[in-house]
Image (cartoon, rainbow, N blue to C red; front, side, top):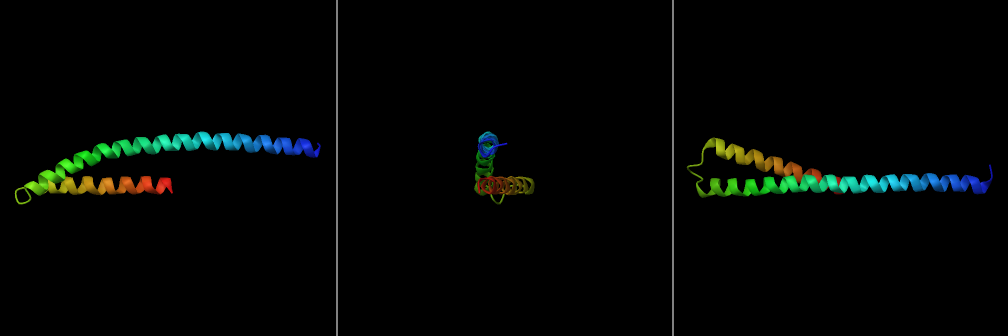
Length: 87
């Protein structure tokens, strides 16, 4: 095999890997976007719940406070996961 053939083969392999990486990167972006969209819906629910709990802090049930706390922790974790994926 000639040097030209070796370089052609190498170039073709690099192009293949590059194309595959580009597709995977695009899919990863879509995956992260879907995750973001889901978190944004949860964020809206969280803001509504926290507004209710804060408005009636003394009268809010323990269950309502715990539910709001859990949703907040889940949101924090979800947003941290997205940040880590984008690094």
